Amino acid sequence: MSEDKHMIEAFKNNQDIHKQAAAKVFKTPIDEVTKEQRSNAKAVNFGIVYGISDFGLGEQLGISRKLAKQYIEEYLAQYEGIKNFMENITEKAKEQGYVETLFGRRRYIPELSSNNYMVREFGKRAAMNTPIQGTAADIMKIAMINVFKELNEKKLNSKIVLQVHDEMMLEVDIKEVEEVKEIVKKSMEDAVNLKVPLIAEVSEATNWYDCK
Image: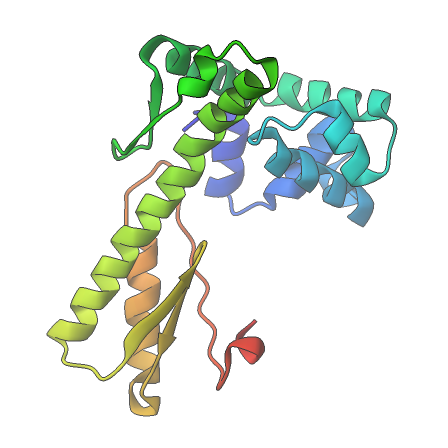
């Protein structure tokens, strides 16, 4: 969505996106990135789209506010596409009063015109995050519909029982396991055609706990 060339490159080459961010933020060769550096970069990667502050990031990582600010600034300097996306989406939301997912699902954000600073800041975070999280939710619903259709068309006994964020759980007839695994993987990976590949992992077990 941000058209950021570094992120697109990482996903196309099946790179660890958090390692890539750590290498750029900490100016370290990617194969020398430490576990701690990756963990810190991951917090920035996910936090940035929620409009995380230097204070919030510092609290989360147990580092000074000054250092957290450096992390965020360096990240935005390296991932220019993301910086532009965040700024543009907020301005656009202020002008039109709403944001949309890639599929046109709309969320109105009246908070952006509030007189209250804290309410406006919430509106900014919602403007940045909704198109991303909302598009992810849209993709998941498309995948679920496709799985449901395939199971019905093939007259299989297996069924979808639960969806949690980016995961789909099915209760599967033991005789249908391999066929259903193929259906689920294909339906999720082919749900939409993006500039980056959608990769789905399938696991099986006799209970949810062991499936992780």
